[in-house]
Image (cartoon, rainbow, N blue to C red):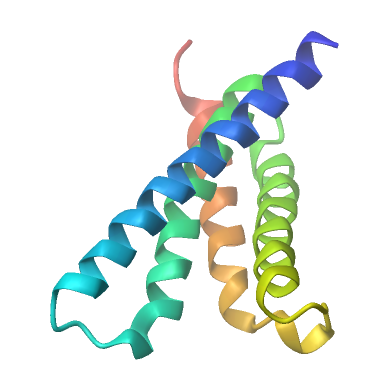
Length: 121
């Protein structure tokens, strides 16, 4: 049970990081002349930072096989983000919703898992 609580804590912190970064990016786009057409790339960058943190957290928590565990947890994280966005704005979820670009945060999360396993406790 303690392991599950720590895992939920890692997800919550990753979602908080994602929400803060998304808010900062939104404010940045609103008050500067940055084109809104790049918003998907900013969203992916925010997911990369959040999944990197999640990967490091899970690597430290699990202690072995950091790449596999972090890739799995990061894939679930990205799925939840895309699912939430699609249900909020489009009321459906199709396979077209998942782009190859969403694989980048999953890979970054895996790298975070490798880093997390190798960090001294």
